[in-house]
Length: 191
Image (cartoon, rainbow, N blue to C red):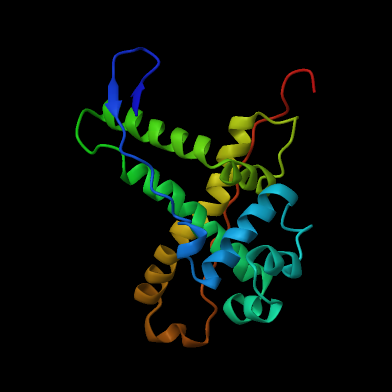
C-alpha cells in the first residue's frame, strides 16, 4: 500500500499489516479470551460485559477465564496491551528511512491503515474515552491515548526510577503511581 501526504509531496510504501490477534485456530485459550473481551468491550463497553459473556464468546469456561486472568481488571489490562501491540506493530512496519516528514507520513499511514482494518480497536478506544458529541473527536482520541498508553509506557519507567532513587530506605514506603490527566478544550461551538 502507498500513502501520499496531503501536499502530494511524499509517497511512502507501507509493509503489510500483521495481526497481533492472530487467527482463532492459532490461539491459546488465554489469547481467545483476550480477543473476545476486546470485541465485546468494543461493541458493548466493559461495564456491560460480564465475565460469563467473555467466556462464552471465547468458547471457554468461566473457571478457565478466572484461572488465566483472575479479574475483569486483568482482562482489561490484557486488552489494552493488545491495543498497544496494534499501534506498536503499525508504527514498526513503517519505513525507517527518509526525512522526518517522510517518517511521520509513513507512521501516520500505517496507523490509519491499522485503524481502518481493525474497527474494534477504534470502537474500544471510543468507549474507553467516554465519547462525547460536546468535545472534538481529536481531543477525545488524544485523551484516551494519553490516559491509557501514558500509564502503560510511563509507569514502568517511574518504577525503575523509584527503585534506583529511593534505595534501601524505600522498603516501608509506598511507591508513586502515575496518574495521567489531559485537560480537554471546551465544548464545540454551538453545544
